[in-house]
Amino acid sequence: MNLQARLDTLKDRHANLEARLASEDRRPAPDSETLTTLKREKLRLKEEMARLSGSAH
Image 1 (cartoon, rainbow, N blue to C red):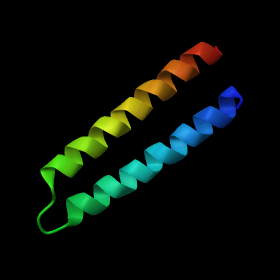
Image 2 (image 1 turned 30 degrees about the vertical axis):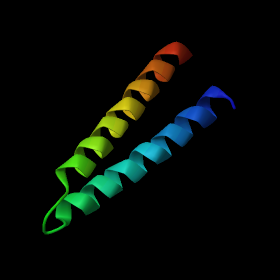
Image 3 (image 1 turned 180 degrees about the horizontal axis):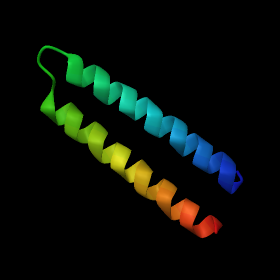
Image 4 (image 1 turned 135 degrees about the vertical axis):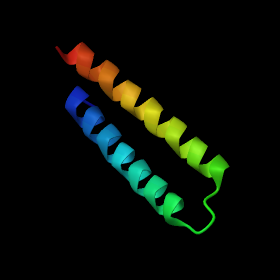
């Protein structure tokens, strides 16, 4: 997989996590453990995207 394809995949996964976070947060009683897990994964993806973007230049 080339670098751009990997970044695109990570961006898609990041957007999916953002949607899942928003959905969970709108629930009448959001699960704080689920929110924390989703936020951690989203941050991990963001850091990997930044790392890969930095290595592309």
